[in-house]
Image (tube, rainbow, N blue to C red):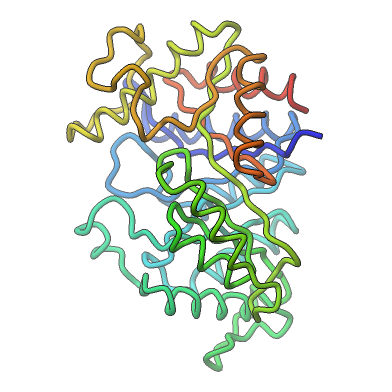
Length: 329
C-alpha cells in the first residue's frame, strides 16, 4: 500500500502577480487537494522573503480549513523562536474549536530568513531545552486542564483541543529532540538533504514512547520531497526550472518573484544533477514520479511524504497535484 501523501505550500508569488493573487491561488489549490485525497496541507512560515506570502501561517491555515472539509491543515511549521508559546496555543486552540479535529501544529527551532529578521520577531528561545519546555507547556494548554505544566497560566480557548504537535528538523539535532519527546518527526529533506538518512536513524534510535510529552507508541516519519508531475518527463523538467531558478536566486542574493520556466539547458551553475539542495525530488511523468517516490520511500522507510511543488502558473501546480493523485491514491 502506498504511503499517504501530503502537501507543503509556501504561497509563492509569481512575477506579475501579487500576494493577494498567491493567497487566492493557494486557497483554490487547497480545495483541490481536499477533493483529491491528500492527507494534510501545511503552510511554512517565512519572513523577509519577497516571493513568498506564507508569513502568517495561522491565518492561512484557518482560511484553508474554511475552504475544505476533510484534509488536515497545519503548520510546516511555526518557527517557535519567533512566537510566544501561549499565543501559539491560543491561535491553534481557536482554530481547533472553529474547524474541528483537523489542525496540526508543526514546530521548528530555526529563526527563519536572517538574523536581523529573527531579532525583530524573537519571542522565545531556540535552545533545545527551552524548545522542549515550550512544547511541554503547549501540550498543557491543549490538554483538558488548559493549563501550562510549568506555570499557572490557563488558556480556555485551547483547553481540551489536544492539537497534535510535530517536530520539524533537517539535522540530527532536531531528530534527537523529536525522538526524545516521543513526537512525530517531519524532516525537511526537500531543501536540506545532507543529513536525511542520519536524522531519520537518530530519530528512530532516540524515540521514547515513555516521555511525558509522547503522543505516539512508535516513531512516525514524514519526509519532504520536491515534486513536479506533467504529461511528459520533458514538460516536468521544464516546469521544475521554476524552483531551480528560485534557489539560484537565493545563492546569488537576488530577490526576484517566482520566474517563468525556461529550457533546462538555459540554467547555469547548478551542475549536471541540478542544485544539490534540491536533489531530493521526483520530477517527470506520472509513471516516472511514482517510481521515484517509491524509491524514496524504500530508502527512508518514511511513513508519509510531504510534497513541495512550485509553479509560475498555479494551474500547472494544480495539474501536477491532479496527475499525482490519479496514480497514487
